[in-house]
Image (cartoon, rainbow, N blue to C red; front, top):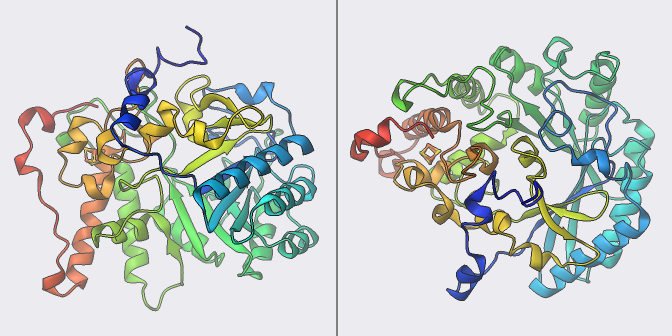
Length: 428
Ligand code: SF4
């Protein structure tokens, strides 16, 4: 067995999930709605926590730095084929790297044009480029705007000190250039897609929140560092029984939630996606992100060589963990939907560990991010390594929401009273 097939690392779902049996039983795949297209596989920064370049999967080294025109055209044709087959009225296209603006906006513009030109009439592509901002100029923004491409920025906070982990290959701070990009984007609210911020427990959550809000993004994604049971997150003790476990990430996020919630309606108009998703789920709506909730994942990645991959965050699990063995030159996206790793992320509660299926907050938590459930040798059918933190945050938000709603609309969650003693002490 090669490392590429991954079955020694993740027997669930790679060998244990019988996709043909699922299909025979009538479980249909959910069409893709989001295509993450790699434009450039290198980056001008060397952030200390980067899950692509510091992760276990090093496959980026063997791929072309820049996506070739032929790969763009073939990817666009495959997207159009999928859209046509499933009669999709709109799709989301996210241009990623590395740093997608490494060689200027040309490749991004070319890729966007290839996709839009291939799409059937009646389908709208919402295209965003996610950048570290260091190469962003007014002229680049102009060109991206003319092509109806929105821009998302990755920052860890709104000060130089909060971005100390985001440095270039010589160890120089990215903040002077990145903060200039944040100012440029703040003056272009229609083009500004939002900020991505990876949580660092060493930072003060209030400083992070207030400094990022001051940059006037329309939305903010607060991301838990990608980690799993075999490579736990910084500062998270995973050995203790669950009920005795500290919840540092839950506390950090709950602090930001209170600042955000209590600042409304007079505070900054800022959508914090993790919070709005949890609130929506508590109110009985479906989720639109893989981080929480039970909605099927509808996203795939196309790398610079045309390889069809699962989500990038899986790079933190093991070598080639995101691989499907498929590529746009030889395979359709419908074939990719039958890969066990892709099918597993569309199973909702049926794809979760037994502990999660019995959990009183499962409808909201959904077992957390798929990547965070991994354990070497067994795979992805475990609760999230952030399990206790997620439950802490969800219950905190439910209490705050409950207090704000008329009593007839209560969102009170059941407690863990029905859990067995074994459940209460589970380690994974
Ligand atoms: S809180 Fe823990 S047990 Fe409950 S669904 Fe989330 S990860 Fe699973």
